[in-house]
Length: 98
Image 1 (cartoon, rainbow, N blue to C red):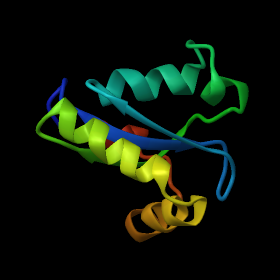
Image 2: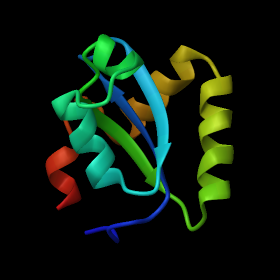
Image 3: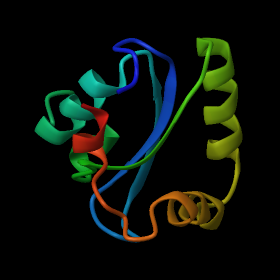
């Protein structure tokens, strides 16, 4: 189980090959729950991005933010490849956080 508050970059989606949202957080469990419950208005809740399909922990928030920027600066296909290398079935990883 990851520490409760560790910087992380993550991708949530509404379905396989669907809309992708890439974000950064200091508390992945809390943030993933917020996406699942659509409690924070914005892009992810508007498009139903509730499934955590990829995440990566970082030792510092600056490192996590830099990685998020590199991912967002890349192509959609690069994000899909990132997900499929780690999670080929696009399984919701939320339960694996506990």
